[in-house]
Figure 1 (spheres, helix red, strand yellow):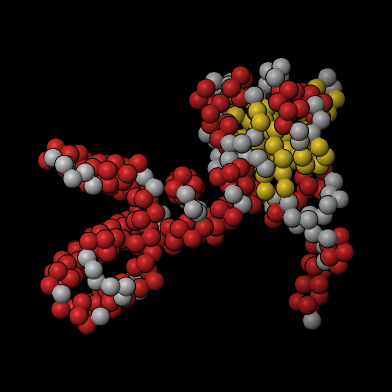
Figure 2 (figure 1 turned 120 degrees about the vertical axis):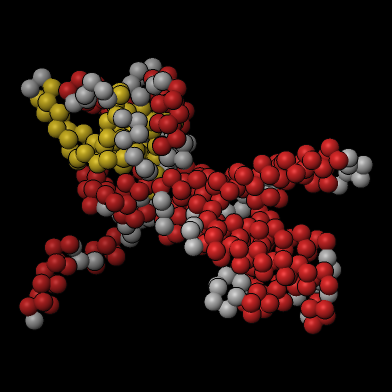
Length: 373
């Protein structure tokens, strides 16, 4: 690649690029992540444009990496590996966007007038402004993870937005991608459109998933409802993460007294965005229509006996092992309380392995014995 170093266009561009990076370094002292992501975006853009216009050979990125690392020895991120991700970062979002398609159409028009060129500039600027608001808000490692695991822009934007809203670590983001949160979010069958105001209906629908992923419980196939409930409470942090932002845990087996008789909900939550109580009932069998009759009773009782004046109507979520969607939809049609029905899944730990594992009490006792020794 020695010939490339003698190329006038390459040398001129490299000098300009070094100047841009130096300016970015100064800005990075104020906003490290945002400036770094925008720098990588611009690096990717320039690499794409130079490879399209110039014939610098297949070793262009490797040579660029050497030159940038020589100029900025204390700055990471200029490996050939990372520069290729900068290129992929820029290409992935622009090649999938409507604005980029419009730009290309205008640019390839040989009869393009000055007016069309101005339109190109406006479209590009609008696209840049949009990404300046969204893309720089998550770390570069998160972006690389999304590029590795997500293949279409709609899903990628979903995970970027969710990461920003929920402040996900990279590990949590990876878990949500692998559990297909995009494919599960807002997919539960419900009657919210008929039982809640539109804004509340949209928000309530968006918070529901189908199915819910309880892989973190390590349950056997013979699990009972009480065991499922107990394990969810024992793993409340992971359970709340699966439920989503806004759920506040209020209690298990919440007691309601009606007509002098005690009734107990499985799990009770309060949602901070919807400003309402949420009752979650668990069924380890296939959905049956009478399950919603019991849930309807609980919602009425919470509304009458627990809900404050400023709280909105209580919502019910029924989680069952499996369901017939037609039967669920038919059952919900004449129910006036807001309800949603979803399935849940989990990885089944074989009984022989589960039996071989120590209980919490046994494990604690063994630890205490080790400390005494």
